[in-house]
Image (cartoon, rainbow, N blue to C red):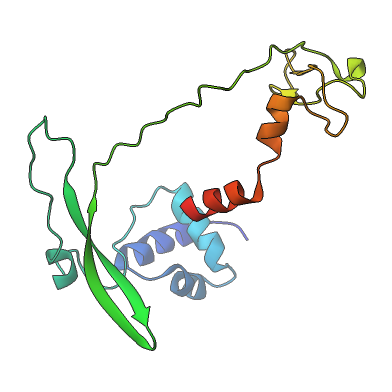
Length: 176
């Protein structure tokens, strides 16, 4: 199907009138809704407001902005609506939370990062760490190469990264 000048003009006119892509496709004939959407994007036609009313609906009016706070004040308390269910009843309540809570990372002090021997794939043995380092498509890609234990393909450090205890995995999943 070719987009003739007449069909493009009709598309522009129908789009400006607010017809949906499906309605335009039906009026043009021989073209799909997706083809209309693609042509609209290629022509960079302006978008239209979403169906369902303007931004001055009562729902939008309920939103409030957070009050200004001094620069030295570390955090603010915000409220957020929360819907939870109790039995077959949905309860809507507002909860308060600390929106400016700072999370700090405290590295473990007893971790020793091994110095990589930078081995190529062909240099690996049963007793070397096979932890990949870097991007395999780059020239500086290598494997750790430190001494590995009999029970693992990795050195002690990389084995800790690769194999997390079940309790730690559950804690990580609960945080996410």
